[in-house]
Image (cartoon, rainbow, N blue to C red; front, side):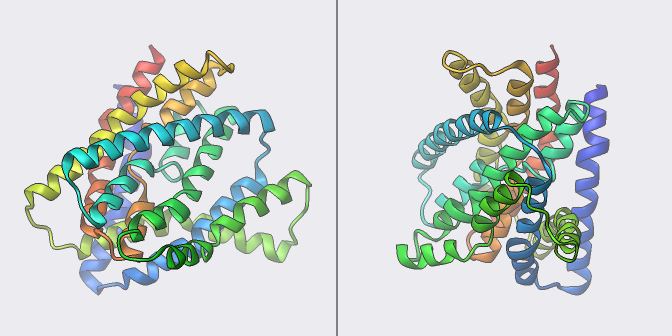
Length: 312
């Protein structure tokens, strides 16, 4: 019960309040959600990724192990989603929206605070979470863009869009600056820190604005798709992560702290990136918004249960 109350008070309630502010602002002033989406994609998200990678010391061995897990996890979870998409008979843009709602999870503004709470701000487990966050930041800006555009754009146009995303250049640049100990000039470092600090608030406000702009209506098929997405993300996700870690331990050593951090990281709700992609590229924004919102609410119970099982 203490874990549940802590997660509710320190993670879910603050996120919900920020979403509520965006919802209210949209209802009062009809904000331009496209502008908010572009700010997130091209300014705030690259800044927060660069800042974390630039300021955190992570060993090459740790990076290798976490990346191996991340690749195997995404491939197998992707296979599960594809099976669900085919059995469900989803077509067009909904196929990509479903994939994104399951494969992209909230590893930054939900995952990092949750990691610090669950592991008492342990720097080792935080490093694990940061690497997961990097992979989850890169995927929406590459595969995610391809997924939502594959049914309506040719490959060349899609690749041009992907190559225009700053995040794919920011990640290697941050690793270079960190690895070689290159110090940023103060006039450059300070704005990056300011922009990084603005990421979480702006992303949550954007979700609230999108929810506020939706025409809330009962659509049985849409709701059943949202439930399917949440089930694959919140239940199958951590179960699959635990299975992968058990299997990988036969080949490489994954200590208990890393294993626990990886399982917790896989249990978080759907990423705001799925909403930003849906809004930016006009692809099933209503489904994406509801999937993020409901998965965040349901995670109050599911994430607490996962942490409880790990404690046992």
